[in-house]
Length: 400
Image (cartoon, rainbow, N blue to C red; front, side, top):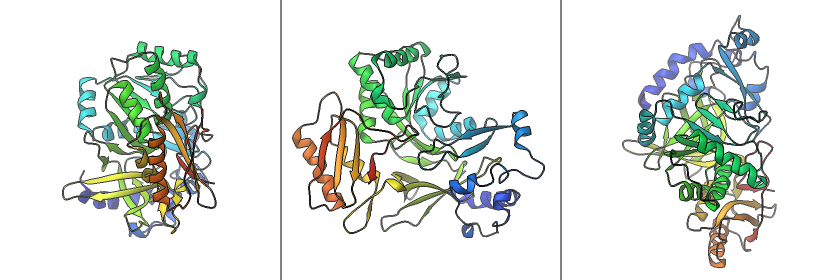
C-alpha cells in the first residue's frame, strides 16, 4: 500500500470501528477531529470497551480466536491487549520485508529459527518469565533464552547456559533487547563464542543506542537492524538495509502531532489490521521525526516523551540527540544521563572491555554540556551496574 491510498483505507474502516463501545460515542466522519487515546482509555472498562454486541471474552479465548497479552509496564501500569489468532506473526512478517536483506534471508529459510533475548517481564507472546526448562521456553521456531531482569547480575554459568542453548538451537537470527544483547555479546567475546548460523540481528523492546549496536556488530559480525513498535500496536517501523527507518503502510496510519520547530513530535498511530482491538489515533508515548523526501519517507525515533531533558532555554533534548554524542567513542557498554532539578547533568556508564580515555570522556561530556546549554561540566562516573525499570527496560536519559 502507498501513502496516498491510506486515507481511503481509513475511511473504509471507520464504520467498523464505530461498532466498538470505545469509539461509538466519539466517532465521526472527520477522522482528524477524533480525540487522541492512550493506555488509560485501553484499560477503562476492558474488555467491554472493545467487544462487539454479543461477544464474550471468555468464549473468544475458549474458542482460541483471540490472544490476550499485556504490555510490559515501562511507561504506565501493564495494559491488556487483544489480538486475533495469528495477527502478531502476520503483521511482523509484513514489516520485516521492508528490509530487502532480511527478506532475502527469510525467503531462503522459510522456517527460520530465532533466539530471543529480552527482559522476562513483557508481552507474554514475546518472552517468558515463569518457565525454566528449555522445552517450556521454546515456541514453534522461537527459543527464549533469557530469564533475568538485570543482565549485569547474570552469573558466568547462566551466560554459558544461554550461549550453549543458542549454539544448539542454531538460529538464523537473534531477536535482542539492545542492553541485554550487548551484555551477552561481551560475554561471548570474552570466551570466543561465535554463532555461525546467525545471519542478522533484530534489536527492539527499547531504544537502540549506538553503544549497544556497536558492541553487537563487533562481536557477532552480522548486520544489526532496529525493529520499532510496541505490544499494543505491533511493529511500526523497520530499519532497511540502508539504515533508514521505514513505515509499514499496510499495518499502520501514522501521524506526528504537536511537532516542535524541528519537526519532532508525538507519534500517533491508527492500526489497520487488528480487527479485534483496533487502536484509533493512539498516542504511543514516543517522539518521532518524519522526514519526507521526493520518493520516500524516513523516520527517526527520538525516544520516550518522558525521557526528554531540557535546555536552559526550555527546549527539549531527546534521547536520540544525547545518544548521538556517543557515536565517536568506544569503551562504553551502557550509560544513563540524569538531569537534576537545577538542570545539571550526571553521566554514569558501565565500561566495555576497555574504559574510554579521559579525552574521549571529556569530548562526550562537552557535547552533552553544549546540547543542554549548561554552565557547569557534566559529572562522569564509572559504575558496575545500572538499575532497570520494573519491566526490565532501561532509561538512557531521565530527569530527577
